[in-house]
Amino acid sequence: METINSVRGFRDILPPETDKWQRVEKTAHEVFRSFGFREIRIPVLEKTELFRRGIGESTDIVEKEMYTFTDRGEESLTLRPEATASVIRAYIEHSLHASETVTKLYTIGPMFRRERPQKGRYRQFHQIDTEILGPDDPRTDAELILMLTHFLRKLGLENLALEINSLGCPNCRPAFQKAIVSFLRGREKELCPDCQRRLNTNPLRIFDCKVESCQTVIADAPRLPEYLCGDCRKHFETLQESLGLFSLPFTLNPKMVRGLDYYTRTTFEITTEFLGAQNAVVGGGRYDHLVRDLGGPDIPGIGFAIGFERLIAMMPEADDALPPLLFIAAMGEAALKKAFHICNSLRMKGLAVEMDYAGRSLKSQMKRADKLRCRYALIVGDREIEENRASLRNMRTGEQQEARLDMLEETIIQLER
Ligand code: AMP
Image: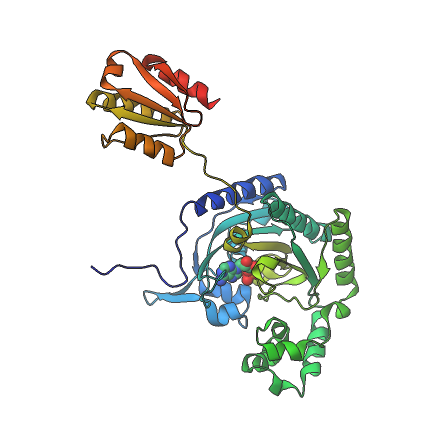
């Protein structure tokens, strides 16, 4: 029969890689909690309109990459391509702003974008996403970036290249957009067709274009930070000062605009050499009008999204898998019955115990104990059962001792200590 494989760009995550995933999730829960974040779980499916309005009509994601379908001819739905829009939708829908002035949320889960699959780029990928809603103080931006770098370092990631930029606000950005448009007038033909269109719809997006000739044209264009208004400038300066307090190295990247339209003021990315300059592992920024644009009150926010797959690829190897404590090798019917009972009772006490029900030879059972890297093996035969004893072998040293069967649980629990 023909086999059925997974969909292109959608991949299985197998053990032992899943051990790494669990380590990342555990660290995220611990670190984020100490910075005051709570977990939110949101659906993977939303109304298409949420992303159109949230991310922006003229972004690559909305224009080309969404998995959108009409649900039985009634409603246009989309598999979420990112989490922020959904988190804000939930924040508004449940009026979280009414009960607290600062809301710190995080969520971990799959996102879907129909991009061309390649190394480090999938159609179903996972993000670790955090959002702070309420404060617009630049120290909040610094706090979020500090938490992020602390988290990454805890996972063993060094040499993080942090880049920051400010995208200004609705007061100062129009002047910048005008400057870009007039800079590019007369050079339209050198731009790719997409950017020629962007020139009229969303000129900032040209900075983000992957086409080389567009990058050449835009290289000498005016830079956003030169156009910041007084408030935005001050915000940006305080952010840098606050990061400086923690000796957190960063570089200013005035060309970083990020791929989503909702950003205002602070934006940041973390890239690593391992993945090449193009590949950021984290992207984030401030979005002071997104809540309002999605129909909620005028509440500012800031957040970031870590690419889970890219993070895993960068993490140093570590032996996450804890081997079982004990293997029970049983020889004979009565021994098998007893071993089955002991094995599952110990598991219910929280100990990792393995055994084999197939009645194989002692040699092959011990081979399996070795392969599983069990720390101890308990060897029981029918005669031992009658005599209320078994042999307990330390698999590392080869030392063997007698253990009383009626005292076995206590003996084994003692080993774990
Ligand atoms: P973005 O939501 O586009 O700002 O992306 C945030 C992070 O998600 C990026 O820095 C990547 O690490 C990760 N990411 C985005 N798209 C993909 C993808 N198609 N496959 C794997 N990771 C991705």
